[in-house]
Length: 344
Image 1 (cartoon, rainbow, N blue to C red):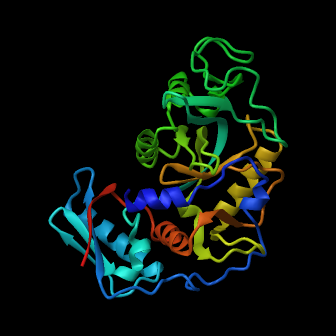
Image 2: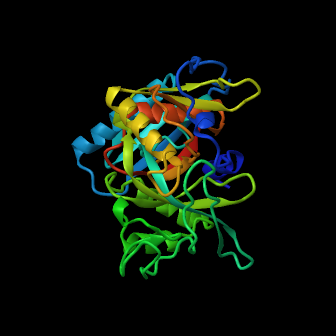
């Protein structure tokens, strides 16, 4: 089992619909320092990660990627680090005590907030294939519909015309969804880890202005969701502050990610959450998507105008610091894959 697999098995974020205020807490959030009690003591060895671009990259692109990786380590509090270019590869090295912070260092670092247009819970069936069940309609929003979720036939529906994108009985064409997109949503097998990982890599490079299909993180009960999402309404550049912090709610042990929006991001967040609460969309769920995977997709009960948000999930301190540093440093200019990891 790889390090990534071990961490994935350990951190299983439940994505059942919950009030948005529980996950995106606004205003009055106590911002604890991101350097509290999180860096483990370790030996004197070093861990080295070799990253390789998955597409052609010139010297300028490699240098830009190197600098972003360097900033990620700096923002995460990693000391005595080294980030250098070796031919067409980037070599990252740090003391072994920072091993958890280096896990996932080469991920894109792309954050988007997207409206959930349709969702379907899936789990491994008896033959290993997916079995689907419709996501329950959000408590404070309109039902997704009465048809079969994931229907991508393009047949006329209650509110559609021939060739219209129909999912769960809802006409999604007004939200930019095409019949081809509904077909991709219906075919997405989020129960298969390899397929889900491949879908995340594709979604991480998708046009933010276009709808997309994505998988959620696996829940504690073994279920996951495939989600049809609208265009990105908030992106990483709308943020002014990203910070890992200890839990702000008593009794919670998992760390969280504090986000603060600029003026434009604050206006967009308030407007979209208000629209979601008022039933403007087929569901009233809002998804936070990181590197092509849905981290959380809670329901929205009211407009949230405060300009702050908190992303929760079973984050350990190193995981929260790594994610916050990645979002703060910016999106890599080229996708990277881990070629090797070694220790000495």
